[in-house]
Length: 170
Image (cartoon, rainbow, N blue to C red):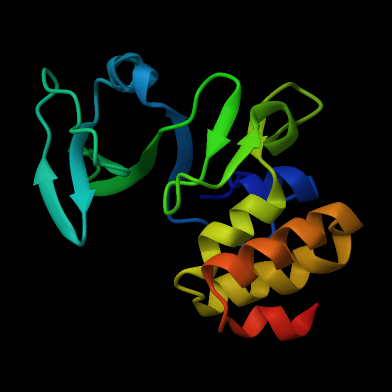
């Protein structure tokens, strides 16, 4: 994709690399409404590497944390929709729901009002797989993080990924 279309790109205010799809999260209660808005797409639940068709009339099971939307006309994946288990007041990390942060502290907005996840939280998600593109994203973001965001990320990595290589790079 050629536009600014990742939370880190929104935070940087520019496209930093190409993206394969559009990733976004919505509260679990809003998934049906979002799927209706994207009715031209065919959705699949993704759990532990298993991809299963999810009929438009069926909501995702409570344990499903990722839905992929395919464009049958183009023959490609184009949306990665993540049902979020938080509440309107709090954000909960999907890999450890005990990690909760006030939604007003974790959701940022562009000048145009588009909401996106704070960079420290985005990097926490990326830490699980730590692919080459994730390392580049970390290297580009780290110098721009506020001291409090660096502290949050450091603390979250210590708790959830204690052996992660990024911990030595702060």
